[in-house]
Length: 432
Image (tube, rainbow, N blue to C red; front, side, top):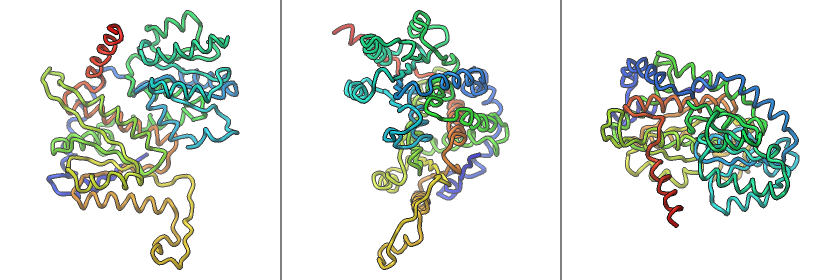
């Protein structure tokens, strides 16, 4: 199980940090908050027990193995960010350059920029490509427009849609479901009780993961182990509640931004995924009483050590309005010694050092500099980046976000603020 290191939260001054006692005294909220979350009928923590869907996905992946050189995901927002994270975290960083790779090359079209669409078209062979079309509603205009485009290309090439398309959508309604039923295109369900930004543990993320060789059962084991912590009424065990408590208490001390800074190249897209989760879930104009509150925490993603050289000046000497999450990975699965002639005195500190040791030293120094500058920060530690630990991280922050919504008295599972732009987009196109 991953661990939380809260030491630096307690070390900074009381004006900018919190104490263990501050966290512990919130324990009485756990039981009523869990009851509230149960009452919301959200399936993000129950869908991980759906073994029938896992079996169906594994069977589909086995049946399609070797048939496709390219896998193109047509998805956006919560339907794409989890898959992007899975690919970055759990496959070779340069898999697209490996000619002998066993699994198809994954491309994720999470935008409708025509350059992106045309240039992915330049590198795929339609006859050996599988398109996964993901939209929970079945009517997302960006995704439907992409689908119509690639479907027309396949039709012109006399390719059978059932061999080159698979839909991930609502189990009963929506245009995509209608097309799939009429044309016998393979389909997988997005459970109606699971919102897009919580859907990586559904076929939205599991289907492409299985097709590129990720062990989805181990991934779900990680979800399940953290789910146990999420539902615990003991604050020492409930790590998601601890994180939500820290975010809530520090938000009231002016920490209106959260910086997530993994010290692992493979976890940078996890920060991207979390950015949507926090922004859409907690940024709300009204609470559940209908009162105008304009609550929210602004998420910022960074990467260690890269952003020590692009953002740390602001973090250490700019406005003290941020809480920092450092993600620490103990073992990278590989290590490389740094060759250094001992005669060069200026870099003698690198003698007998590996790249992982250097990275860990820089991570520790960054956290220490934040602490010395009175910037609250905490470290989340995992032993390695693998399926189980990534599943734990996903559920850790999904659970924390659910609790944070309860702290603020808002609905963390809707997103009314994005609807207006959809309406205006439709009007603009109709009024051309």
